[in-house]
Length: 165
Picture (cartoon, rainbow, N blue to C red):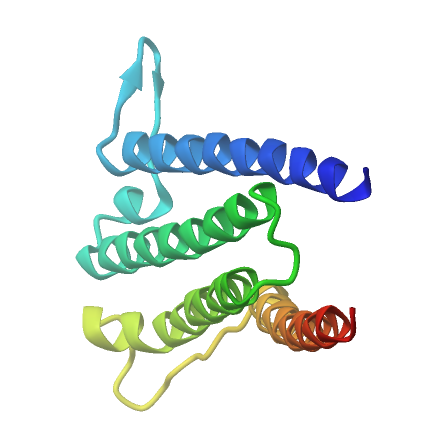
């Protein structure tokens, strides 16, 4: 009963992830290519600045985020199929956390590299800006790695319990 509810919720959440993922991709594509809906024109921050380096960072971030959401979808699909603590679930969750960490590190690295590459850095002056979002994202992904370790331990306990019975 409990696992069937978990499976149903995982299947619903998987659909929600796919819908949100699709909306993110559509919004990014509309902003990236400056799609207009009558008097409303959609532009991304990177496209608005006309900086090719910001556009590349945006494209890279969306690609990495897509990989992370794909791993999350794989995990939710496995849970919906009835695997609560399988190696597939734990591995997909760990890869989801890894790709989110990579996204956050790209954000931090881009804040350093973009001004230098685009030529906006002054010769003897460099301003390094970090946002609270950067620290929060890294911290949350590190917590996700801890949860992945907990899931791995739960999988081991589940296997031990099956051997006893």
